[in-house]
Length: 167
Image (tube, rainbow, N blue to C red; front, side):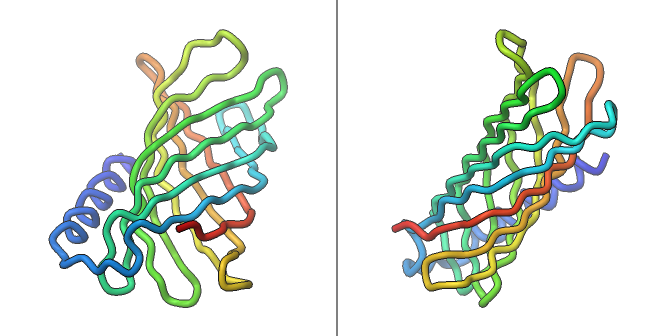
């Protein structure tokens, strides 16, 4: 039920941004980010360590708000397998010194070689804190749901790293 509410909230935010008159100052820019991640799976009681990478491209800006397409990848090592996730979706970010953002991505995840992929639904929230004109410290939390036939597994991913402006 919580995932449904997040999806509805993201659709409302995207709709508001689409109605707003676009400014061209930030359109065509974006960022790339990478960092270390900690993926907690409560069902098995394990926390995996790994790497998170994402790339975002701003396609709509209005005032101090950007709407971006985002591609997210995660590679996390549990006991016995590497969980690999590849997701895409949308991000809304606010430009005001510290840059908070919310995003929703969906995609596929696998664990181990040759394993069958499962659907991933992943809302996330984070903040970029600038420490130079082009570089930021990033802190992010993602609430991941892996959808299997007839069941689901909920995970939480915390990650910390660097984001750099592009464009």
